[in-house]
Length: 214
Length: 361
Image (cartoon, rainbow over all chains, first blue to last red; front, side, top):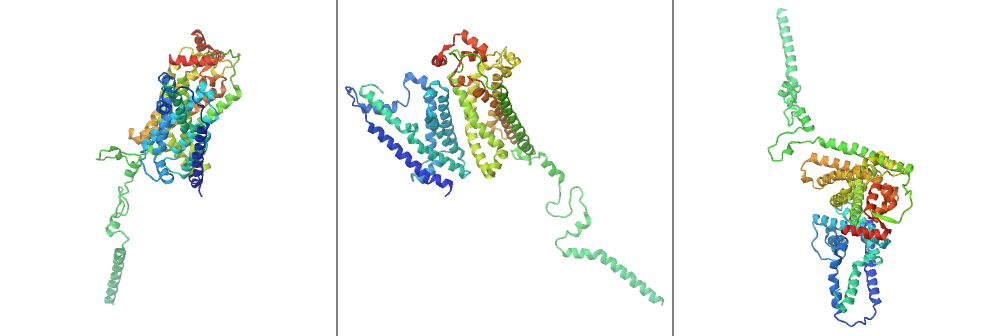
């Protein structure tokens, strides 16, 4: 069995299993925590508040726009770029067809890949730069933040390096890092990719019940 | 008897005639029966090459040595198609470029970076770390705004990534091939090129932003040379300077010009159709490599002084402020101006707020 076959075979299934089971475990754990009974008189629907918050929190409150503009722009650059790459990069589409789903969907042309990757890289580097050059962010960032950022960065970098598929080792290196990323995901703040919905829902329900726009 | 003698004479003459006839016609008849020999006419009329014509009526019977020599030396001919560049069959500059790229550039680029590394090492051994002479006052002066810090670190990250991938492309054949072999080097170099081409355009945009943001205080002004004449970095007590001393300003302008050249040549290398000219491409590659090597060599000093060589320097680029003592010892004229403007604040949290306030103003 070659190195590539290992990282695309057993290690891939291990990583994917840890990712799915770990994430589900965490979500169930969060839900089982429950919350204290809200004794306030309901003035509006908590559920509507929770749903509203899911969408309203995609943009900052007007008063905070200036102070959050840097990580707002950098955050969107990174996340949109990353998801475009994840879902529409041609090698990813082929891999998903072969290993996850058997349906086909269109993939990005080369220039599209390059633009999306540039947005994603610029966004991720800008977000990390903020961590090392903002006096407050320096203090509240811990090892997990840096490891999560660097691991994601290395996954992206090796992916771009393997784009031409000129060498099997490059693809295997990328896949190895993907497997590690999947295993690391449930035990880190990378889980925010899933938990943000619960967080927004909780805040939205709390304020929605009190008749306040979350 | 007389009749006999006449008969003998006739026989002898006939024999000699036969011999002469055999010598003159015999071989020709033999040649005509063989298909690998040139025809009679060729053999008899052009025994030696004359005026470039080689004996024999076969294809390519002219050596045209002068013509081919000319082509080999880059003589431009005539064509009737629109692409006039096709009139040049062999581009001699290609070989010159290859020799420059593979010999001189590698050698002198390596030497320059080696000098830089050894210079910094020697400087570190001789001078050690520049520590503050006086005690910290606890009052701090905002030095770099958040925007300045962000753009600086963003450019720095990209510079390091591009520098490393670029060095693999430039020196990989000499440094990595003996370790990883030809196939390994091919994979690493290909991967480096992909990353280099992808991140390069982001660097160009970021560099432009940085040069604009840092321009204001990097214009040369009266007093800059005083710093240099008093010993600059080599002085035990830092000579006074403005916000940036002559060394820092030189680094800025080196970055502006070499970085500009790096960016421009990089654009031509990524989009070769912009030039549509092989010589232009070769020149771009040489300019790109030279600018990169110069910047990398200079950046070694910048990184050393910024991170390790000068106590408190890193704080200015991470936190955004410096202690009042640091300001007065390293950039006295600037610090005095800031103190006069009452920009000095008590303690770090105030400095953060002051920096944010100054930025939003």
